[in-house]
Amino acid sequence: MKRIIYLLLFCFVFCLTGCNSKEEAMAIITEVPCETVGISFSLNGLWMIQDEAMANSNVEEGQTVFLSTYKEETGSAINVICDDLTKTEGATLVRLEDYIADIQEQLKISSEYSYACSEVTKESLYGQEYQTFSATVSNLGGEQKYYIRRKDDTIIILLFSVFGEDQLNEILALGKEM
Image (cartoon, rainbow, N blue to C red; front, top):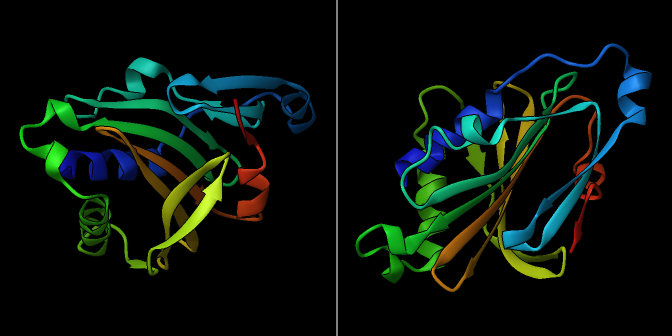
């Protein structure tokens, strides 16, 4: 569980190089399917997609990153992560509420960033119902929005990090149900 927090923090600050010009980058659209979770994202060239091997290099057994992308000019990011609970002894007994509480606790005790977490609510997104909360990062001037659901013995985490002039609703609009 702690390694997934470190992965989320890593994804949060990960940076790569960008395209030649903003206009060229915006003209390039890549469809990125995340079939396991039934979602796809339409990303223009301003979104840098992390290599699958790199994205999965910092996760524990059973955890898989299906998408790790960020927008270089603002730092906003989208991460789709699955945690197969059958790979960790006793984890299949963990309640979703406890899993989420553990993520919030790890964020709150982070020594690198100053997080403030909202209350957990329920929201529908891409045809599924999620438990969701926001984590405001005051010392970076941004916000992370977590959408978490359980599908059998797998925890699905959609993490949207929003910075700069980007808006959460615009980033959410990049995804759709498959």
